[in-house]
Length: 205
Image (tube, rainbow, N blue to C red; front, side):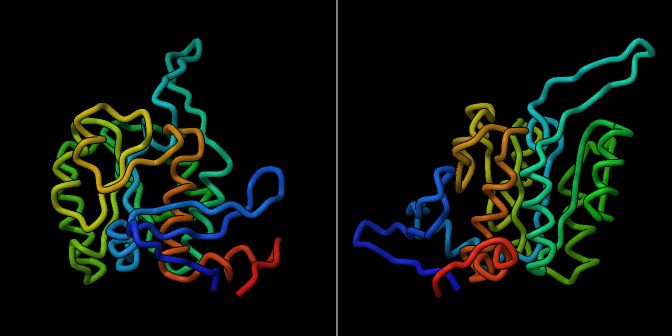
């Protein structure tokens, strides 16, 4: 497991590899780490979270979406770490469905108007409590989820009301690696990150 320290100011700092190959200390509030330790299910919005929120239309009127490869890798690592992942969107999208299938995410919900109803369905199916669920969002429609789950996360460019309601706000915006940051947080808080990255790097334990 990676090393973690708890300074007097109540922040955890986990070892992380920077883009230059150096070890950086990434601080997380102590309360966020405590909440993240309990998470067993990660619910992700799609538009504005797994994408940057923009829609591209082709000549036939089909909506196209752009996904970030690092977010996908984070989801795969989270799954290998034993976390359930669900994608929940208010829109219908063939592109999102294909992305979910590519990532091996079988819990895919589209055209959703009541995300809390989907949460209740997932809690019953997986025998979980709300405190074992994390939700990542960017818009007002995500607020009811934030009020129910154990860890509500807003992406950096979420609307102000969502950022204010979140337990944690990612440094990166939606569609640009924010989901990867959430997956890293969960794996580090649960002591699974070092094992997850061991195929590619050696982390001191």
